Length: 293
View 1 (tube, one colour):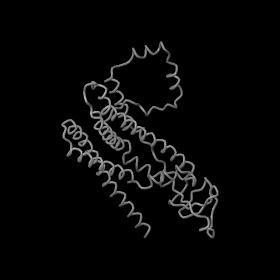
View 2: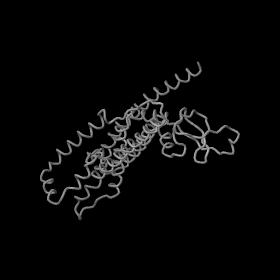
View 3: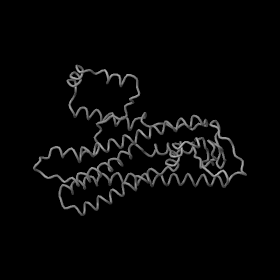
View 4: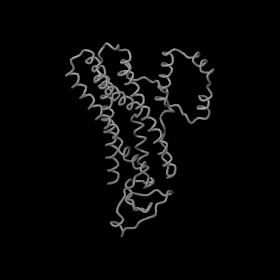
């Protein structure tokens, strides 16, 4: 109950011309008309759910990767992927917090003043539902194909490591230019500092921290899956401990329902981790054999 309540349509592009103007032009008289034309709650919820499903599973929801050799195009693609990833994380955070709020805190409004309500259990239920919903939403909004796309973009972007100029004074140092794709191990000068190329191909701006963070998180394709598996495993372990130590029937039922949903999410995460781990290990071994030959 209440594991996902898609009330907010965060995927709307508020930068489109005329969208904010239409909202701002609603006057006092128009407000009554808008309310009169309002539909019932279940119809709105059903249409919102269909829209979210179409956006998550449609072809337009998944960005594409272009294997180009232009450094400028690669950086632009990374900027677009950063915006898309940030939007997905905002969708996860807001939707999980909203779902947990409706599950844990909204029932408090209907409690009479003469009745006792366990505030500690309400806060614990809020945390459990928010974390569980976050993992489930991240599993759907960050699928394996999307993580592989981010990994390819990070591999093309590359990364720079700042070095001490005194330690490499006798080594050839190039002046960094944005039109060049730098190979691994090259030393460049940028903003009065010396940087060493870390990736196989490096087009990132050496002083840009966002490029460094993008390469750090997505240079390894299984990093996101490993984080989700550890987080889901910790939540399941805590829920099992709470389920064993709980003495109230309503807490036992709530923990059991959330635990079953986490079992399914944990199974899918482990399955994806095993399959992708074998696939990437096979690709890495094949590349190493080609280099040796």
